[in-house]
Every structure is written in structure tokens, then in C-alpha cells.
Length: 414
Image (tube, rainbow, N blue to C red; front, side, top):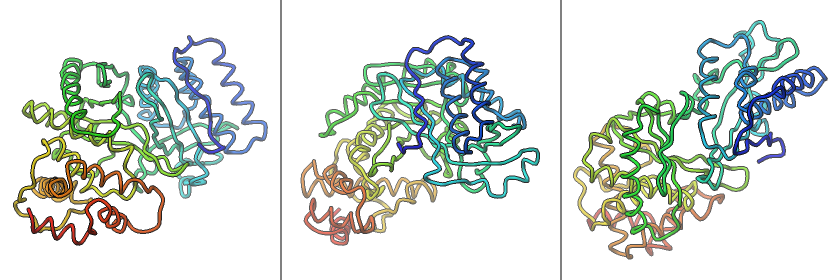
């Protein structure tokens, strides 16, 4: 975290609301009127939100919302508070990230004519779930703050969506969530989806057994699986710009670049409209695949291409089979974009090509070689050179020849 962080931490076991709520709100108003800087005043707004969450004070949380906010935003903020309160939060903090971008409010003043000033800085939320997360999960928000009658409040979190900067969404943005706990998993779900969450818990534990037998490096002892209630919720949560109907599940982690480069707490998301209709063995293979991604996040860095990520996960989850010919392949390892665009047939081909490449590597250099390659590429987090150069150098170390020769050998030797 930078020195500008709002280190207001939500402790486990929140206290009941009290008269302290009015004191916190009053102190915020007094401080904002006392000549503090815009950034300091906005940090106090964020601190009020964290404090309100800690004490379970919904009114104090919603007091940070400007009167000019739409009814939709006010309702969503209430649902967010209720959702956050339903989580087993060990910690929660909000940080103003003007160290990254000072202000993105250019051109917004006309949208809020009654405000004295408009301020739109990036805001970062970091949180941990009790007994689950060993590192922070991190979300990014683009809150528009308005100054009105000497107080800053939040009016929107959607003013930058049209330029491709959406604020984070989670399942708890839609209201309270329930948990299905197993030995190694917490399935977060809508209360209406309890039975499906129970079934997923059993599948996840069986997938975890498979993961342990195939992954020869450290694996997480606890994994969070999120079961959205609708496809629209999943689309918002993932901020997806591709067709989700082609997929069954996703593994995701943000990146913390404050100190070097490291993945934050991972999450697995279920696209259950497809997964629930699939055969049980395919569902188990799916979870094995996603849990391989989750385990590999700690090893991976910015230079690891999708064909290595997906190839390792698919090859391990598919039973570490021998290399085979891929119908329709052009003999060229797929680019990252080929795993999400171009239609179901071409997406499947990209997965099959990457799996075939990892199977070929294992056949030539041993079963540990695919994961060794991922770790070798991922070891350097900040380094000169392109991703292609780093992959080439890592293949030299693991395979004994560079990228061009590996691709030639693979395409001719399947």
C-alpha cells in the first residue's frame, strides 16, 4: 500500500450500532469544513464507509452518498452494504489512489451543475475473508465525488464506463450472500441457490483430490468459489466483453503492482447455466482445470502467455495424456485473444492446441516440464524484453531450444 492508504480495517466480530455513528458523521463534516485538502476530505469519506461497515451502521454508510445520486445508485449502495455485512470479513479497507491517476473528472462538471466541485479518483478496496484469504483480494472503483455545502459525497460509480473503466462488481453487490463451507472451499452464493452450492461443494472437494495428485508444487489450502445467480451478474462481475455462453467457469486474480508484481487473492466463478447441464466427469475436470489456474497464479507473472496457462491447466485436468493432432490447426501456437473470441469452434481449437503443446513438451522432457515452463516464465515479474522473448528464453532453459524451434517441433511431431 502507498503512504496515502486509508488504513481503516474492519475487524472480525462487528459491534452493534451506537451513538458513535452520529459522532463519526459529524467529525467528517467538521473536518471537511476546516480547510483540509480535497484528497484528505475524500479519504475521510472512505474512512466513514469502512467505519460504518465495522459497526453495522447502514445509515452512516448511505450518508456518504450524494443527494443527487440516482435512485438506482442509492439502492445499489444499500445492497452493497448488506452484502458486505453478510461476508466473513477479516479486514476491509479503502484507499485513494491519486498516486496512480490524480483525477479523471474532466468534462463531468456539466453533468452535475449543482455541485461546487467534482472529483473522480481511482479508489482501491482491499479485503480478506476470515480463515480463507492469506493475502488481500483487491477491487478497483471509479467513484465520482461531489462537493456540496462544504461536504464531499459519492454520486456515481459508472461515469467512466463509456470509456472502458467500469467499477468492480461482486456477488455481494446484489445483496446478502450465503456460504457453503467444506474442508478446502467456501462457495459464496445467492440464498436461493443453496442446494446447488451444496452439490458444488462436493464436486470441488473431489476436484481438489485430483489437483493434489497432479500439481507438484504448493497449492492453496482454501479456495473461494463464487456462484452467480444469473448470467447477467456473472457478466458484470467479470466485466466480460466476450460471449460467456462459450464457457463453464473462470479463475481470476487481480495484480498488485505496488511492490514488484504479485497476484492477489484468487476467485473461481461458475457459469452454471452451462456447467450444471454438463456430465459429472466434465464438471470435475472443469474444477480441476480452474484449481490448477488458482494454484499457478502464485507462480505466474506478466510474461506467461495464455497458451501456457491454459495448456498446463487443460493437460493436467485432462489426465496428462500424450500429444495428439488438433483438427484444423495451423501449427501456430494461439495468441491470447484466440481463447475468448472467434466463436466456439476456434476457441476450442485454441485450447486443444495449447493442451497438445504441453503434452508434447511433457513427452519430450518429462511430466514436470509443463509446470516447470510456467514457473520459469513467471519467475521474472519486472524485466526488459517482450513476452515472446521471455517465453523464448524459458523454453531454452526447459526444452533446450527457443520458441521458433519448439513450435516447429510441436507442429511437426504431433
